[in-house]
Length: 433
Image (tube, rainbow, N blue to C red; front, side, top):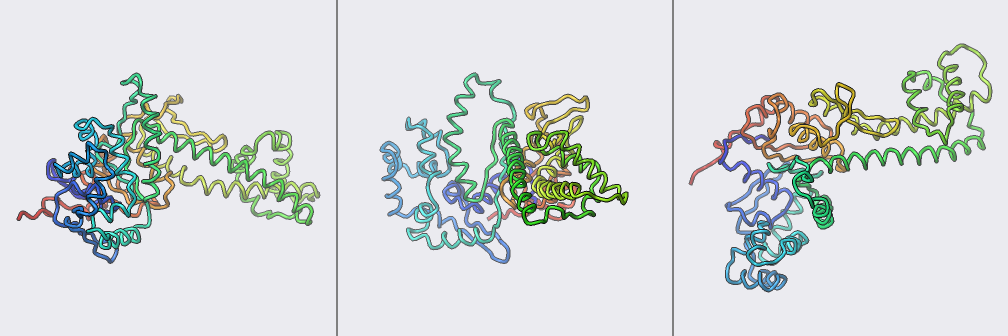
């Protein structure tokens, strides 16, 4: 779905309401004026009336008891305080009341779904509870939302001298909220610099390396069992003969020196060459044992290749956008670098604004923990050239992990592709009463 409209038409409002509705963040919908939200999810039509978000008197009093005294007093005098609280205007309210914004935000962000349901749904929560269950059942994946302010690309260390210590405090406080949002099935992608992308890649490469170490460790035990059971001289000749020289070299290179020395690898290589040449020379028992061991390595290699497919696909798609540079994955040393055409390396923070937007978004879709994503983007054209705008949504849709895309834009190039059939002018959807 692509909604098109000029600035000031309400595109961001529409996409925010869609996001808050699908993620069941009822308290964040509280600050919007609407009669009804109606969405067709699969074969089911789901509706939310604004009247369902009016706090009941009993539960309003219960909420007030949880507030600090200054906020409680203000909320009793001015109902707008609750609206400011639920619509996340923490800083503004905190400044007025001289209370830390973190305290106010934690009260709402830590509210469990049951608290929200009972607060907004007349006390018993039946209607919103049914709606929440229907949404949860209808969306089998994680919702990824990219607001217009999604990435502050400038490395803030160059702007603020105490950024590191301030950011550490912020991340310690927010990490719990980030985990809760992921567990709840959604992520709102607002990040500083490219450190989040680098950390995702670092953790993934570390998992690959550790998994390979464990598998090679297990290999020793399984090979010993095969020797004891008399199976260590059996292997599939066709499997080894079907490997090209580059694959054989890569498989052997992945085995650390402390597991197989260079001399051991050379002996193993000789046996492999003999099998591949199919010269008809008689195989010794030693040859069969080595071939069986190598076939075990091939199994590990192929399993590892499958597990690394998402990273390879990420690199492939990203490189379609990068100009004068490319991302290189070293699958022997488990390293990812950005190489320029002049053979020099650069950091992710040195990418252009548009390149950062692309790499960041693709890293979440291709390298994230979820198996499927519902992607909602406000102005996907930000910092992207015309050609990149035409390419972005189709590239996301072609990912095996993307189940749904909703975008709002004022650029005709975003849907100058197969998404044209899904584009609608937002003005055609507005009814003046």
